[in-house]
Amino acid sequence: MVTTTEQRGNPYAQGCPTRRILDRIGDKWTVLIVGALGEKALRFSELKRRIEGISQKMLTQTLRTLEEDGLITRTLIAQVPVKVEYQLTAAGQSLRAPLRALEEWAIEHMGEVLDARAAHADLTAAH
Amino acid sequence: MVTTTEQRGNPYAQGCPTRRILDRIGDKWTVLIVGALGEKALRFSELKRRIEGISQKMLTQTLRTLEEDGLITRTLIAQVPVKVEYQLTAAGQSLRAPLRALEEWAIEHMGEVLDARAAHADLTAAH
DNA sequence: CGGTATCCTGTCCGATACTG
DNA sequence: CAGTATCGGACAGGATACCG
Image (cartoon, each protein chain N blue to C red):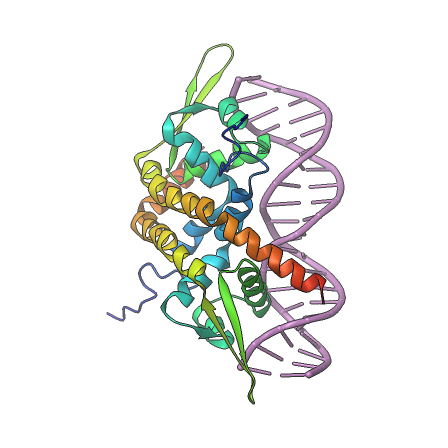
């Protein structure tokens, strides 16, 4: 066997699918949607209300992508007016832990990073 | 005090800095660079070699951003030819754990997600 | 070696208008 | 309510050329 490190999950290799998957996860809205759906299933409009600043287009688009990836399910309840519920699949649920870890890191180190940015801005301003 | 949930680390609020920080972290190359520097300090060209497909421009740009954010340090060794070493700061190091968790999730669920995508592609192809 | 500067193309994404 | 469709500006990011 000519098994190199590229074979399995090596994100440093160009062809590796983990890259594509990491890209998706890294997506701004994906993180927020998965987070929002973590507690319980939500409707389209509930999601839109919870996630400030997301446009209808991006919400739809991201939901479709998540559905394609098997991370959420979309349930249409045929009534008037129409009702659509989104909820995490098992795979989607399993993503919550690593994402929460990231969120916690962001919250914890936010001040530190902002200070560093400010310090750098001062330096450049002073030439 | 009129402290709302928006005040602290609530990524769902538009103004919250955690969003900006999560955006940075979510960046394609950031994850790979921090991962690569995890083991030991590396030179510019070493990083470029390790991270397949990154352009010089993006490597430089991402390194600058990471430096501004206080996650890595840049050390210039004045000799001929010039040598520059990048290494993680303490804050940068602390980011490794959550990122590794994400990488591991990607590796573990890669197959699952790819299957879901394939299944979806079949459905749409069949009309 | 480790960059910077410039050009240029693709894509992201918000705004808007319309629909079952 | 929960979308789809379309347009257009901003911007990410590759290719290329040049520099200390």
